[in-house]
Amino acid sequence: MSVTMRILQQFDVRKEKEFLELERRFAALEHSRPDLPQGKRMKPISGSEPCNTLVWQGEFASLDEARKALDAFAADDTHEELFAKQSEFFKSVKIEFYENLNY
Image (cartoon, rainbow, N blue to C red; front, side, top):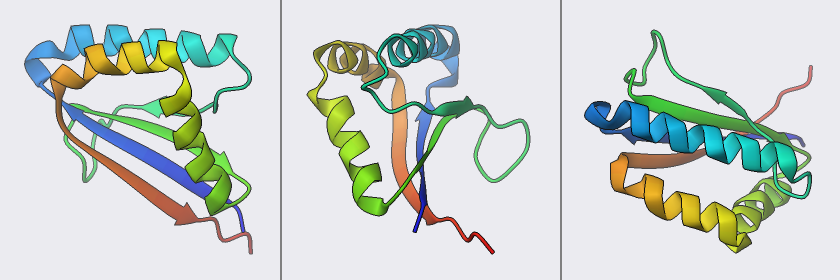
C-alpha cells in the first residue's frame, strides 16, 4: 500500500517572506541530500486551507516508510537548525497520511 504524507504548516501571514525564504533553504537541503525525503511544496490559492499554509507532500511505499521520513528529518542537524528558525512563524502544523488507491 503506497502512502502520501502531507505536512501542513500554517504560518503568520505577516512573516510570509521570512517563512518562505527558510522553506527555500529546506528545498535546497533536500535537493542536495538524496538521503533525505524528497517532497513537493505547494501553497493554496483556493481550497480548504488558508493561503498562509505551506503544504509539503511526498509519496512513500508504506506508512512505515512515511514515518521513517519524519524520523530522518528530525535526525538531521541542518534540518533541525532550519526548523528551529522557522517554527517561530508557525500558527499550526498538521501531518496527514493518505492511502493511495491504485485502481
